[in-house]
Length: 425
Image 1 (cartoon, rainbow, N blue to C red):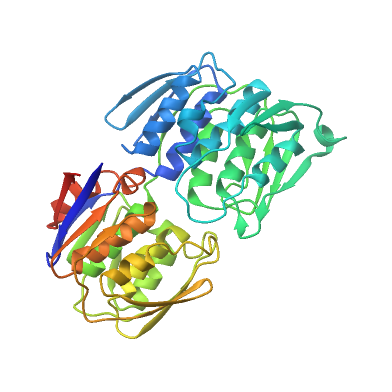
Image 2: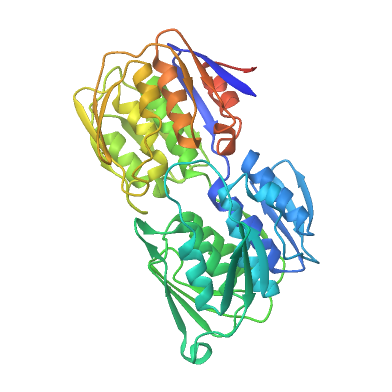
């Protein structure tokens, strides 16, 4: 096990390249199971989650070659059973469900694991696949799906599936249904679809493979099933959450930080909130620059489905607002229990109270170093950001959480001037 030691007080300056999107890479890698032909995926980040996904593909029978951010997958023969030993380690492994069902008409997969940030049910995924004709049996912690008959008249008139859940559209659910539907005869209409850029990126990849998809990036996606798909090549979009995290790093501890290969359109809600706090941001076609300040204003954010403020940036803004002037309010509507970072920020001197799904943050002049514990991916990032500005040396334990979603974050921060060290425990 490893931990970070971060000495606060360094000033960040310079440029850093944003990696390919984790949340695009995982379903796109899974989608390679839909064809026998080779698929080449570029800008796949080197993360524990993407490593788990390539291991799952290999266990399912695919040939996987990986070098310098490029992954080549040839799934000539595919097994229908996803191994529990790997699936339990990553919730996003559920995205092999759609392509296995779409290609084979059957699959068996364990209920997946991952970080615990509240209720993240998969019932909407299963409901969507049932509309495609799947029969589902759950036994011994495994889900067994088998192709049955679609709803009467669905092949000719089209089947509609609503993917909106209790807290909004489900991204992985939309991904799963889209991947299953591309090889299902007839028309499938996804209502209440997730509109995130990562969903649109997956749709672009599937379209390159020969799928017929319209409306990706909106709340209504229409899919015309085709007989088969072919291999293709694809470059993953930039990771908007990594980019947003480094923007907050530049805000908290930077003088002038530039993100290269970043898409500012995907970060409109984050950039808007940083500007409200007083930060100057230059957003170009291929890069974003943030200019640091000695002080900044607090704000109010409410997490919402895209294009609203992303839940995956909520923890990082809690760290930012902990040092802001005035009182801030952060309301979490997607995962109302996603506040496991708050007690650790309070250990560093943050003044935070919680009222149901809202964190009330009163800014303090400074934070102090303390031993803290990472609890999930984005909470880990918030602790790293707070440590950049804290007085003394902060020890962050269980950094394997942050390695799930940030490619070499310690090396990138070091390049910008941070004093951060990764050590074995």
